[in-house]
Length: 333
Image (cartoon, rainbow, N blue to C red; front, side):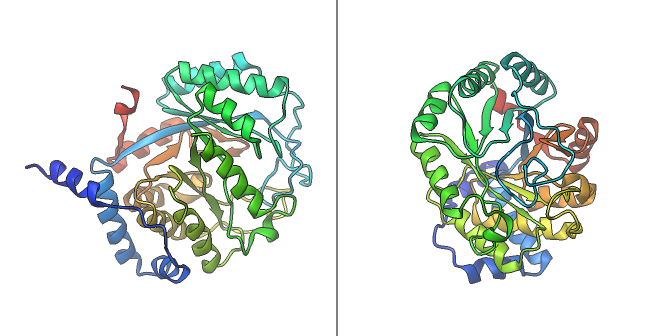
């Protein structure tokens, strides 16, 4: 029996736990970095023995003018950031052309974002459905993030072939009102339930570096890990402080904090795809490699994430090669 065969057998024995306590998670976050990485490695090598990563691409379909007051977001109407408010979303043909280019560049998942408080009925939603169907016809996974939605809208998105709906919790329930006041934490959970009920997978994570405490990070992870089932996709972001937003003066986090967050998320949610998301450009190459080591098995691939900069394609190709991780080409089969 080869090591690969053994790893597959071991991975089948790993079961997700849904009764994590705050103290258990906090102990993980505060553990010696070497011990934390070792524990995360044990889990990650069992569920992902070949260290394969998924490449995802993200496009802003409707930029700016959002009614929410998220303290980190330059697309909010409450922000003075220099983000153009484009009243009309991109055309279906433009989005599908971008999706085709993303696939040719190596992406497997194509994510589309709308700066809305909630999905708008009528022509905008009909266009969204066409985009989802078109992306799926290209052989790509399709993910949408567009705020709150109704049960009917979730069902129609599922019928169009939507793979995943992104709706991040952003921060802990306890810290939430310091970051957002125009939508409650409970409303976010209700949106996730509508998505899950429609048979669409969840993409749900958060952001660190917004002035939160270790307890807040543990609390956010507790909510995510104790969902049953756990989110299939968990993006871990670090704040990119943008001028004009309420958090513009916050300094970038120590990259090791991101490594700790990824490692802990991997231990708590062994079968979720842990996505190394916004803030990668501030992390540096070495910290990103440590995040792969800690359990990240996806990155967003492309020069821009909605409105913030992301490492260039060539830089990411070099990073993947140097880290020795593999693009999961079997996803295309």
